[in-house]
Length: 89
Image (cartoon, rainbow, N blue to C red; front, top):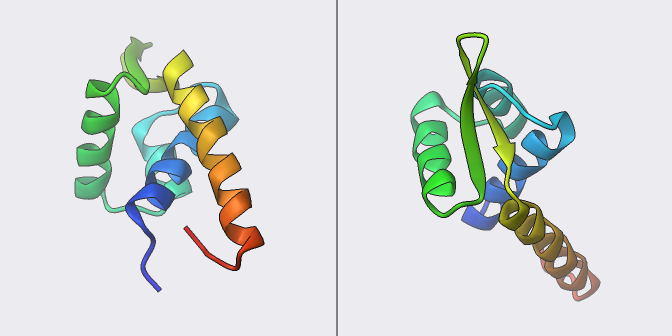
């Protein structure tokens, strides 16, 4: 079964949240995405203000913004409600 767009976004945000900040390679493996798909999602999430990127020691790292953390919290609530009705996101 293919993951939904929402599930992929949640996976990316959860990887970043779990680490506090994460390099693209760590997100790629943690969210199980190809490099091409990952770069598209990271760009979109950054444009929407959900992730912020910065250079740290020459490497790019991503961290959640306040809005990203809020979205992740709300998506978890929606997922919990959906599961109560037998629906997977």
